[in-house]
Every structure is written in structure tokens, then in C-alpha cells.
Amino acid sequence: MQTMQTIQIGVAYSEPSQQTWLNLEVPETATVQEAIERSGILEQFPHIDLENQKVGVFGKLTKLNAALKAGDRVEIYRPIIADPETVPRRDRGADGEAGKE
Image (cartoon, rainbow, N blue to C red):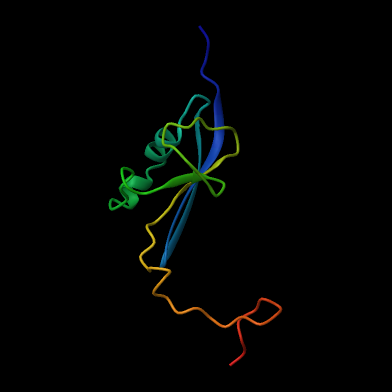
């Protein structure tokens, strides 16, 4: 009988008042969705909606059925609530930094 190999991965989710990073061991065949479900983060943050929120691995958007590799960091992204076109822009100097007040 062959045993299932496992890999170590991380699952990260952040809110303004709380950041969560969970390390866990999953089967080497695990998908992004399976890792999120196994992490328990959906119980910790029941308002996470994987149907509508984007997910990624190391900052790159990915699908819930994407395969994982050892060491991957699965990230669950919150929706952007500020419309970038209505947020005032800061004046930037030649060095790219915001102006001093």
C-alpha cells in the first residue's frame, strides 16, 4: 500500500485589525481550495466568500482548483472598497515620494 505524500504550505488572510498566517501540511495533490478548507480559516472568518473573493499564490492571482507546490503561500484577498478614481492622489515629487507637509 502506497502512502500519500504531504507538503508544507501557508495560508494567509488579512483584515485591517487582524492578520492571519497558518502553516499546514496538505496532501501533495491538494488544490488552493482544499488547502483553504483544511486550514480552518473559513471557520475563523465566516464572512470569507470564495465564490466572490480572489485568491492567489505569492501575490499572483490563481484559481481555486490550482495545484500547490511545497512552500506555497495561499492568499485570500479582500475586495477593494475604495474606488481609485474617487480617492485623491498625493502630489509626488521627482523622487516619487509624497510631498512633505
